[in-house]
Length: 93
Image (tube, rainbow, N blue to C red; front, side, top):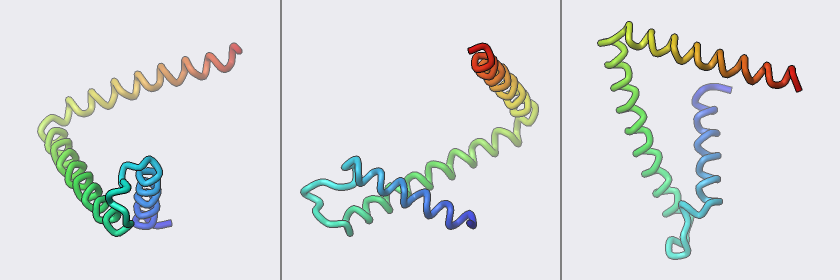
């Protein structure tokens, strides 16, 4: 499965969930065409937000490579400690 197919499948699933939760549908709206337009607007806003945040993160990492490396090391250490504790809990039980 290519990345485009995976992304498309993911957003179709999100759309179905939003419709199921009545976020994209209201009795006043009434038709699926309006729901699809609203969903497209939501996706566009989400895309713009993610693109803006990714650009900002990229800029930060390029300007502060050692800070980014330090954050990655600390995050990896914390995740490792949490994972080892969780694994230890299962062994003792």
